Image (tube, rainbow over all chains, first blue to last red; front, side):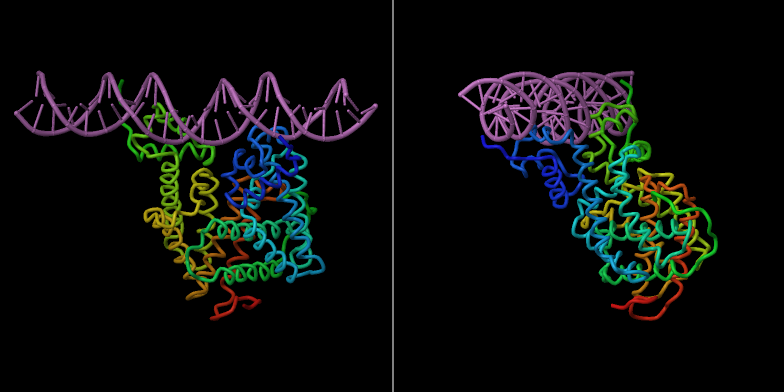
Length: 198
Length: 198
DNA sequence: GCTTAAAGCTAACGCAGATAGCTAACCGGG
DNA sequence: CCCGGTTAGCTATCTGCGTTAGCTTTAAGC
């Protein structure tokens, strides 16, 4: 029996690809094993459990998303950066539904690696907002607002939640422009330092 | 053996309550059976399968949410109605995390009953926006924007996604006011309202 | 070439969803 | 009041999946 030459990273990568096809929740050890050309129990030489595999996919997906967002916004600032961010975000979610579902699960509080991957995307978001949002502590509110809105839209769309025939691209642009104008507009309260994790 | 006097509705209700406690995805026939004081196989006299039970919980939850939203906004209009809607929405999600997770799954396209329950909340949302949002087809954009933002915020919060110490109530109010001002701002016919265009 | 770590396999266990088929509780008509 | 039909509930059992145990074989290093 020739060896498959597997490695933990290869199993995680196959799992991520499979998650995009069958859905993150439908992922099973059997499917992944079949995909990499190995019997189910052999996977346990590379990953500790299905849960560990899911965690690995989450971390990888968060990094990929953060990377995509960083690339999309580099060299831009202000409202333009926010538009590029929003555009790249939605595109990535639609292209990688399984991976995206993996990123949604909150990272375990005492999982250092997962938290770091999770914070990456947040830092990019805060950087993007630095040019067009409110300063100081209000930046956290702005980050939460933008993240919530984009996440909400993308996850509803990804789940097929928009039944009406109205053009979805257009609705998304509408939402993004509302946010941009809203974030730039107000002001008021301040103080406190910028945070770490949203 | 005295009978438990069970009925399909009672099983669904117990399942919904349990989902709030252990999470929608962690729901199992065994847990529900234990809760209603019966052996697992007996549940199949009342529900066809775990999937059918989940569907029942989804429908019931959607109705409850729609009902809550309707009660919260009755007699109000304009921005005030939107605030009441947003407030009631978040409150309900936090109080019923399992039920809320149930409402998030997209209803099966050819499931009449589920679609109806799903449309109920949408109709209330459109009614609420009638007073403060754009008219005509743009109302769909407005509805999607508001729904996406509230859903995104509530689901992230419910999943523990906000790690920073910043006051979450405040962030929510911030988001809601952005939306209100953004939705009320324009009013014109075509093109995405505040800035960009198709 | 021989040793050895590990990559792969088959066999098997436990648990959850689900089905089959028996038993006994309730309900209605005589 | 009893008798028969309906059906809620039970035990026993099957299946599928995650997981573990333990053997076999590959391939890497001396």
